[in-house]
Amino acid sequence: KLDYVYLNHDAAPINSKDIRLALNYAANREAIMKAVYFGYGEIPNGYMPKMSFTDPDVEAIPYDMAKAKELVAKSYDGTKIELNIDAGNAPSKQIATILQQGWTEAGLNVEIVEADGGTNWGKIEKGDYQATVSYITSDINDDDELAILQADYTGGAKAFFTNYNNPEVTSILRAAREESVPAERAKLYAQAQEIVVWDGYSVPLNYTPAMNAYHDHVKGWRNLTTGWWWLRDVWLDK
Image 1 (cartoon, rainbow, N blue to C red):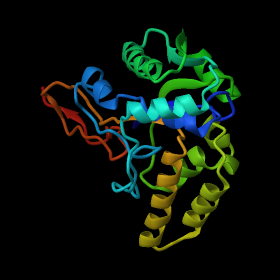
Image 2: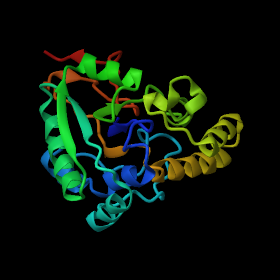
Image 3: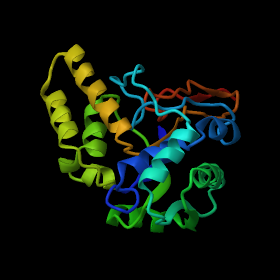
């Protein structure tokens, strides 16, 4: 699972790469990791959940308030950014509050907007949003499905409703899909990962680990690599 902020690349001022990068530079992920996740997880260096070909060597966008302010001063026109969260979701509210503090310090005008989850998802699907705190999970461990879904504008969902459109990335992902040699596929996915991250595709927050609580009489419980659970071998010792 990857917790992140969806960004609509067609909506001002998010349509400016400088502003998208400023949002990332001004995101205090360490504070979010401590306050919201109690230290569980990993600050992401990618745009989708950790998969088979996630490259650990791609540089994550660091917390750098001075750089954020520089980009804002250069490219911001004052347009208010609405940061959407699901009403009643306390962790999302904490995340949004920390982000708002950093983004405001950088010089951006940010308002947190709460609505029910269905309303927020409907706005995402219609492209009627600027930024939304949410997440994505994967059902398989191969990169192809989510990479095409999230970063390929021609993949059927306009890069998962972000309107991100980089023809170079589309070409790389198509080549990776056709490549059969794992080492060569890894190189292509790493290349795409670096470009997408540094295009300011989103504001990645946490590679969230699978966490479960269960009684000690529950036996055989385990999580799959993708985070889901497998109940076929679970039994009760009571």
